[in-house]
Amino acid sequence: MAPRGCAGPPPPPLPPQAWVWPGKMLAMGALAGFWVLSLLTYGYLSWGQGLEEEEEGALRTQSGERPEPSITTISQPHLIFILADDQGFRDVGYHGSEIKTPTLDKLAAEGVKLENYYVQPICTPSRSQFITGKYQIHTGLQHSIIRPTQPNCLPLDNETLPQKLKEVGYSTHMVGKWHLGFYRKECMPTKRGFDTFFGSLLGSGDYYTHYKCDSPGMCGYDLYENDNAAWDYDNGIYSTQMYTQRVQQILASHDPRKPIFLYIAYQAVHSPLQAPGRYFEHYRSIININRRRYAAMLSCLDEAINNVTLALKTYGFYNNSIIIYSSDNGGQPTAGGSNWPLRGSKGTYWEGGIRAVGFVHSPLLKNKGTVCKELVHITDWYPTLISLAEGQIDEDIQLDGYDIWETISEGLRSPRVDILHNIDPIYTKAKNGSWAAGYGIWNTAIQSAIRVQHWKLLTGNPGYSDWVPPQSFSNLGPNRWHNERITLSTGKSVWLFNITADPYERVDLSNRYPGVVKKLLRRLSQFNKTAVPVRYPPKDPRSNPRLNGGVWGPWYKEENKKQKLRKNKTEKKQKKSKTKKKQQKAGSFTNCRLGVPRG
Image: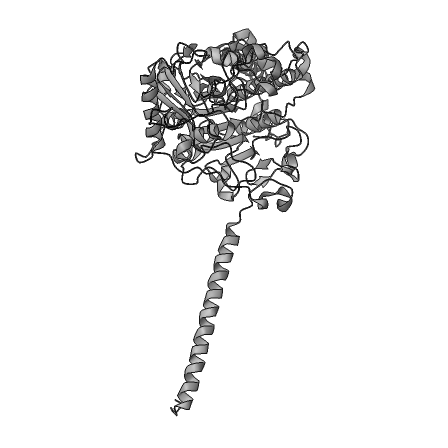
């Protein structure tokens, strides 16, 4: 079949018999045309999934979309995981935002909204836990993020989600932000289970030029296609739109009768705050410039997800697909995000940093249009998706995630009763924390947070603790949100909240329920016994893009290491041979002096 818009080969000439009965052929043609028209009409009327028929028809007319073709259903569903970056809890229409997100609102309303859903407070930890099903303490990534200059990446002994899906026949593709390390080639997405990769390796960068400066003199290009810099795409296309186009291309070229896993990790709405001009039109009333830019970025993202959904329908994937949407952490108020009415922000273990926007949309859901208030964590997607894909998880692999599909699809109770938000032993210690404050069970100077059923415990320094009210109609900076600012009490290093009753963390119950505090401290101690050492190496000057053709990319050369080893071995052999020759010479001279005959 010729590509759309291109001329195919000329049709073969009609046989002579075709011209014998022109009247008869005309009648047959009319009947055939009526039959095709009837089929098209029936397909149009019966195709609608989630949208009203008139709205769906209008969408298809505008986008040039064709009705979803009839595809033989396969038992394994198509898995589409969409990860937004730095989207605040309030920053979606159905959470009361002034930012318009009609696509997200509609997909969530027709699916299952996850309203007790948790991620990690920053980028790398959320991504590592999604792709391994393990807490940070079990991968060594419990401190901060992976920096561009660090010789660090997701440990290679962890079997990733795409690797498990490939075992059961899935085609695996990643589009967007990786941020799980790249210092050696084995760390790259295509070596961690993805058939193809198109996106960035770092945590942020310019949306148009795809350049990133980590520090003065440490700047480089950060856009990859598989294992090579994608210089051909250095043409100023906004990353949200560029990534969406790549997703459309992948779907257009893939056979929907074969299962596909698409991991779409958008750069938006992470800083820098950039968006195409037309998306600002609806937000001129927002005085705060950061909020206005952020709103434009989120509107563009919402439109992108609409285009992804239309592509799933157009190319025959939608009816057998599961779409999961998630943010990777809370919003950053100083960069336009809002987590109101939750406390805290990105980078903190308050609810505003770790409670995320999330939903599942799928024709395969049994209970559509519902809200799930059961406890769900980002590690749960690993076993859930492998189970849906009819894969198997080895018994000797210790996962921290649970299969929660029946919880989401059927409304059953979640198998999860607790979440270890994290234990970071090298984060800045709380000055007033101590073993005594932790009843001899735990050193409360250490930053940690845990959820057990309704209870949440925090120790150490949990991070910026304000409640930041909506900024939309104010241009005042964070220093003027004084009416909601809470100064941490001197000597405070333990907090306890009943999150079910007090989701905004207004009432600290640590003094009222010391028994509960002790119980959660013991649980923290149990988790800590299973932790692996922290992986957070110092920066490596060889990571500078100037030494790598102006590109951020793998700099650790395994070959160099092997060459050094070979060189050392060669030198050792040469030294040994020289020593033997000297010994032989010495021996021969000795023999001569003793008068031993030659031969």
